[in-house]
Length: 415
Image (cartoon, rainbow, N blue to C red):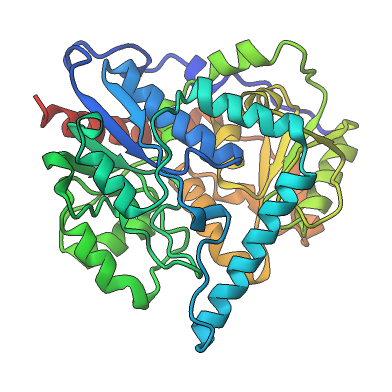
C-alpha cells in the first residue's frame, strides 16, 4: 500500500513571512483599495484567490473591497453578435452554450451549495455596493463619492483572457473613460489563461496596458507577453492564494466534521485522464474518492460527489490523504498544505490551459508532479514518489516575497 507523507502545511514551517501580521511600516487603514476580479463566480478557485488578495491587503492595514462588477458575458454569455460572419456565429454559439449552462445551474443545480457560495461572497468576501453590469456603470460609480479609491487593482485569475463571445473587457484592464478620479492603477497577477495572446487583441491590450502605474503577471509567459506589448519591466508574482499562504483559519472554522481518510479529486473542464489517476490513488491508499461538485460537469461522477462551500472545499483538501486534480488552484492548495498530489494534464484542445499549472510547478521544482493521465505506468511511479518539501519551501518563499514586495511598493506610492 502507498505510504502517504505526513507534512506540516507550508506556513507551519519557520519562515520570515511578514504578511501574517499587519505591517506597521505601511501605516493605518487610511488608503482605500478597489479590487476587480471574478469575485462573483461559483468557482472555488476564483472565490479563494479573491479572498487571498483582499485578506492580505487587510492584514497590511489597508481598507480593501471588491468593486462589484458582474458582467453577463463572463458566465451568462452576454449579448448576441452579428450572425453574418464566421466569428459572429462562433460567438453566438458560445453565448447560447453559456446561457444554457447558466439556466441548467440555476434550475437544476444544488440549491444548498448555491446558498453557501452566496454566503461566502456576502460574509467572507464582504461584497457590497451596487451590482455594476457594464463599463458605463463602472465608470459612473468610480466618478462618484462612493467610488473614490486611492488604488485600483485588477487581478488575479484569467481576467485578461479574451473570450470568444466578448473579446477583452476594458474594465479588467482598468480602462475607464472618466479617469477613476486619478486612482493609482495596478495589475496583480492577472492571467491570459494561455501561453500567448491572440494577435487580434494585441493592439487593444497594448493601449490599455500603457496607462497602468504598475504591471505584473501570474505566469512567466504572461510577463513576456506584457513586456512585449508595453516595452516595460513587468513583475512576475504568484497567485493571491500563494501571496496570502495561510488558510488555516478557514480550515479550523469549517473542517470540524471532515474526516481524513479520502482522496480529494478536483476536476475541471473534463473527466478524461483524471478519473483513472484518482481511481489508481484510491486503490493504492484503500481510500474513498471525494469530488466537489462542478456545475459545468459533463462527465459522470468520479467517486462520491460532495457539495462544499469554498471554505469547506479548502478543509476537505487540507484533510485528505492525497489530491488528484487538473486545476491550477487544486495544485496551489496541494502545495500550500503539503499534500501528496498529482496534477493531471488537460488533454486535446484544452492542453493550452496547462500553462498555468505547469508554470507554477516548474518554478517550484515540481514539474514531475504533472502527469499524463493515460500513462498508467508513469502514474503508478509518481504515486509512490515522495515530495521533497524542504526544497520546495525556499522557492515558494521567494515567490511569496516577490508578490509581497511588489504590492508593498505599490502601496508605498500612496504615502
